Image (spheres, rainbow, N blue to C red):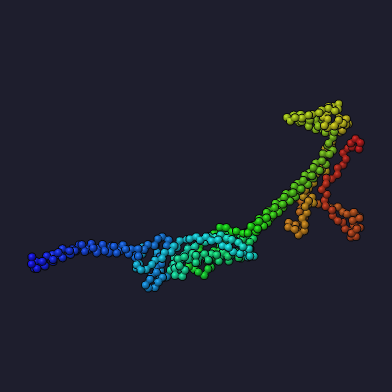
Length: 378
């Protein structure tokens, strides 16, 4: 084999190793696909719902504060970095130890509802950083709670409405000079006062309730005394009217009726009957049957036995002048009756030296009755 024959053979081998046009396309596609797969985490990024992205340029201006990336797919250079910030409402629980207006130590458990401002996420990242909750939200919350509870005393905190206290703390947070966070609400979970103060306040409230209960009892007793007074006047009027009608014959008849009612009762009893010739009940006395017969009682004159006017009675519990409910004028009778006055005797006019008469209050007693008859021995 000569040298001329060897050269064409080598050229043919090199031509066999050359790629065809279609093979080149496949090779380039595989190369760029592998490169894109390797660079995907560094070039493409996804902003999830409720988040914004802050771009940090390594080679140029640093943190981008003029715009943020919203939800969706984004593209960046592999050497740049995206920082994600959640802009949903978040809750931060804190236990704050503070002092009341008089220096008393108080512990308050609060929950603050907040969210970062989406359009200022770049400034927040540049000035505070991703741990803005520990650096910004927590200190401002403690400061606001202490500032509010320092305006109240322990008794005020015990009586104040929780909603008002929450509103004051929220206003204090919203007035903060840092406007990178939006505060949406404050919830007070618990207020811990010292045990001695809790005991003292509880005893005070208990005594107040007992005092109100005693006032109610006193008012009820006054009404009961007034009721008994009216009842006594009615009983007095009743007996003054029926006094002449209580004859021995009527008492005997009432005794017989009582004996019959006792005999008809289903309860166990012992009825003793007798003691006189008329077999009257012994419980009524044995001398009733021996009483002489009396004439029938006369009819009661309604003009001379009128019921007294309760409006004319003097007050059982007079109201002191100047006390609540006192009036300068006496109440007028509801039944339209007029009060009568009697002229003073000579001794009254002589004692005053003026010759005038002093009126006396109208009498509430029943007017005297004319004797209708005489009893035995009278």
